[in-house]
Length: 106
Image (tube, rainbow, N blue to C red; front, side, top):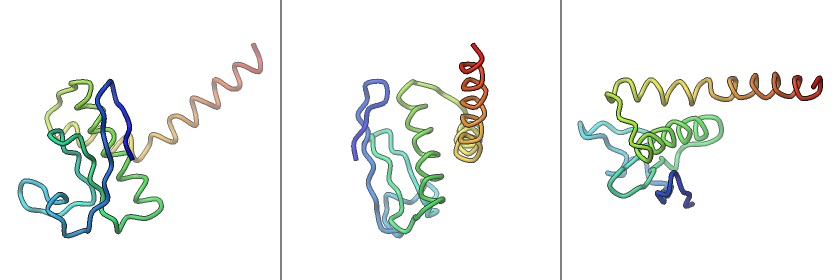
């Protein structure tokens, strides 16, 4: 799968859980990695359902930060990406509900 963020072409690749692409710089294995050098989001092929969606959202948030030159300390970026992956649907559902109600009234 290939997609564009702010003119940068990104791709998603699924890898075996023990793949080198799914290791952080400290050699810890993770479920997803966003690589700014290859413009690739690597995901574990063991991911399914809810967790697959959550990890992909988290990694797309990293790709958006990179594509728009949003520089945060990595700890803050991780908090941001986790927040969006965990609570983003609720935020957008509430906004859509409020704006939908506003449109019907107005």
